[in-house]
Image (cartoon, rainbow, N blue to C red; front, side):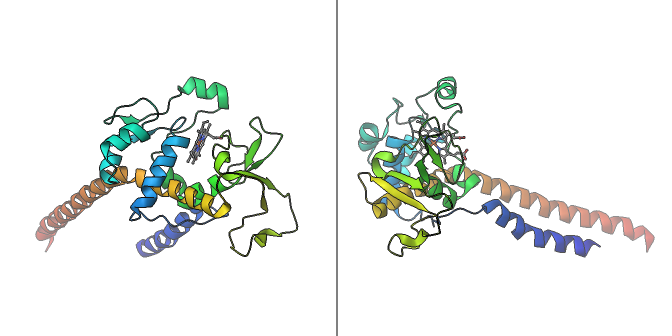
Amino acid sequence: MKRSLLLALLVMLPISVWAAEGSVPFEFDPNLDNQASLQRGAKLFMNYCSGCHSLQYMRYNRIAEDLEIPRDVVENNLIMTGGKIHSTIQGTMSKEQAGDWFGKAPPDLSLIARQRGADWIYSFLLSFYLDDSRPNGVNNLVMANTAMPHVLAPLQGYQVHEESGGHDGESEGGHGDAGPALELVQEGQLNPAEYRSAVGDITNFLVYAGEPVKLTRASLGFKVIVFLILFTGLAYMLKREFWRDVH
Ligand code: HEC
């Protein structure tokens, strides 16, 4: 009985992990050792995202240290929202304003990489397409009817989505990642490969941004395990104590 329960748990664990992953059109392997990518990602995030999204567990000076960006560069080039080097990264908009403008407040992105996964964020940023029926003129394949505007349009340009188009998908020179029937109809400053790489940098940065929290969680996990080991020892001693009288 006990064994089958354990077995069931063992089987369910990978399944639930797999189910949480969902399926998204693009894959991205984060690489936290790639400091140049993280630096570019930080810059892109501050320029294109921090106006709306906060990173409430992340401080500018921590980014400066971790990514080895000189303090004055951070102060002059990365702080877009009037914060100080020691402050956390706050959006410029109040929740009410944001609610009025977008119908939904832009969420804090500290934990987004762990909630959604790197593939999801990467795919989300690659999957905006023109849609007249939406208030801000775009829709998104990964997050249908999203309230977020296509803020990276100056870089990517605009795509259209060919509804049920006869799966001509891999048209873009066999990259295999030309995407699910998304076609660029208006070019931005970057070509598609450069844009994918920029989006990869942002994704990398967001995975990194989730790290400090991950560290505290790991140390908590360690404490829990130490507690369990001590508790098991205690329970064992107790058991011996009880059985001594029986024998
Ligand atoms: C003009 C404001 C604005 C900017 C700038 C902006 N976003 Fe958003 N973002 C939103 C809003 C509003 C939502 C909520 C969308 C929804 O729930 O429909 C959102 C949602 C998201 C989500 C999904 C969160 C979830 O609920 O899972 C991600 C990821 C995201 N944004 C990333 C980014 C990144 C990366 C950038 C910079 C490249 C960025 N955003 C720039 C407004 C913005």
